[in-house]
Image (cartoon, rainbow, N blue to C red; front, side, top):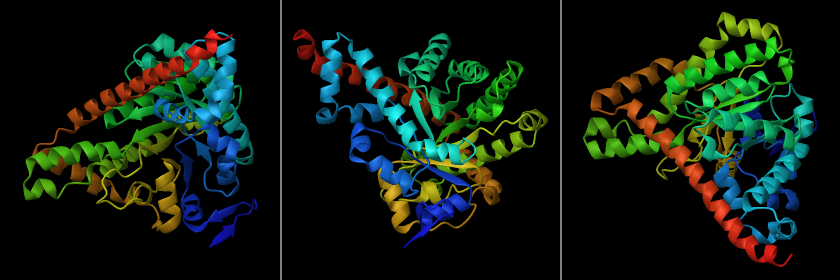
Length: 381
């Protein structure tokens, strides 16, 4: 059954229940096919999603849809654009169109939802100056108030986050795996917003989310627990990711209670919301909605792949806030993991490095694919 919310949008019950708990659902996917077929517009109008996130792997998959992109790619090839320039034009066009579709959501609320994210070149993940420069370029190219620029939470990405916020650029900080890294992200966010205030920017229009990755943590920790093999270790499988995210939310609440944030809030700033990313379940033994239902907490975003969204709509049962009552249990899980020999610091360092490398590789493969596809067309110009 579907119901209508006060704005007249059709909302399926599990999604309405999530919204009532303060959870925003964003789709972790974008392609020109979704745009031209009306799929994305339908999902927005039906109230299924209130935002969209992208990454280099998503665009790599999308641009393989040659039948949708080919006419535009031919035009750009005839203009003599390089593969990288072609990719930038195509991805910016897609993000701009998605921003326009989500603009009513953006304008109907506080400006925190209705957002579409586009990521800087992942090859710049360890270069602060290049990250800031490209973030500024993307902000200018998309030219929509509801765009967000994604910046990896590397050592070099943190000062880039601060600088972009100081310039009034909305930022999605991505590839966060560890609690220590998240502490650094929160500090960099406060620094940037304080500088934005000093620079005279309207803080109420600057948005930021911190993308804390979930399922990949369970995948790696479960692998290590499986190698240990004893009953105590095996009993901990499937617990690490949700515990990690739960303790991250506790850090978020601590920042909101602090004086620095209170001063910014008084100046009109919105919190940097935690965003649960990588919420598709990779282990078929686990409930396919667990990284949505078990991470319900006020003021959060959950960015879901299509299969997870479908599962939540079909059989998701929202049981209220599943995070704030479980701080002690999450801390106990971390203690138990340490006791059996799982080094969470080592886990998350490896995951960050692998995440940056995966996005870099996807981007390089995309460049190679586009260069190959457009070479003949460019020769004909």
